[in-house]
Image 1 (cartoon, helix red, strand yellow):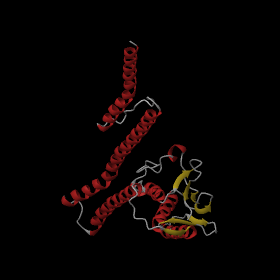
Image 2 (cartoon, helix red, strand yellow; image 1 turned 90 degrees about the vertical axis):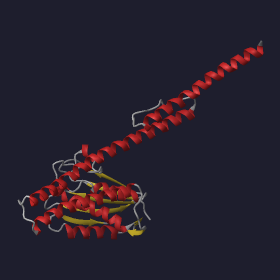
Image 3 (tube, one colour; image 1 turned 45 degrees about the horizontal axis):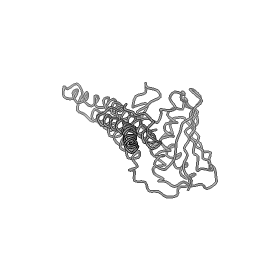
Image 4 (cartoon, helix red, strand yellow; image 1 turned 180 degrees about the vertical axis):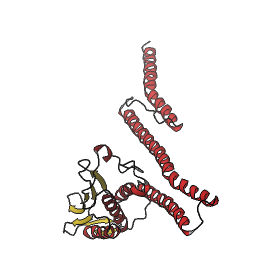
Length: 295
């Protein structure tokens, strides 16, 4: 009788334990199936039969949140890309119809306008390709020691040539400590030129853009500070997003493609660095802070 009772008890406990152990696995399987079918809101309780199941559920929910964020970003990017392409394509279509109807002459001036719109499309596609390759770590980086002072001076010289008629002064405040970073000088140069061009664009005539560098315990800190329009607090966390413009009224002609800062962030991250923007608000200028590992 004792043996029978012990056997029945063991079977009962075994069945109870098995149900408790299998239930979270079944819930996990159902949630995984829902996500596979496109329901990115599926989650599982972050509790389970033992710490291992709880850890697994937490990791699954974290993965689900990241997938949902990626899908949301993808949808927004496709929507924004369609919006960005619509304007130049509509212009090209308009010129084509005007030429066909005889409203515009098929001369060099008209074809130059069409060529300008096509160039904008090509530039947008190239920028998107650069961002995608940088974010996916597929850039062909030719890494070597790069003197920080030379890097910043070169970027400032390039900006001076392209921004010489803007009435904005670009000045340097560099640490003479011979610090170096490990990176691709061309890609880092591109990132800095993007920041300088963005700063000059948002700084009025008579304003100043200052490039500075300092060596820190963790690496090298580079700043691009302007005395321009500044950024409201609600925009600071989004200015590096693709196609995001602080001033939604700016067109591509006056405000760029809205992807320059995205490219800059992707290039800095590809070098193991970080970039952030800070501003005291509208009318108080903006400072972009780059942190790069020191060589």
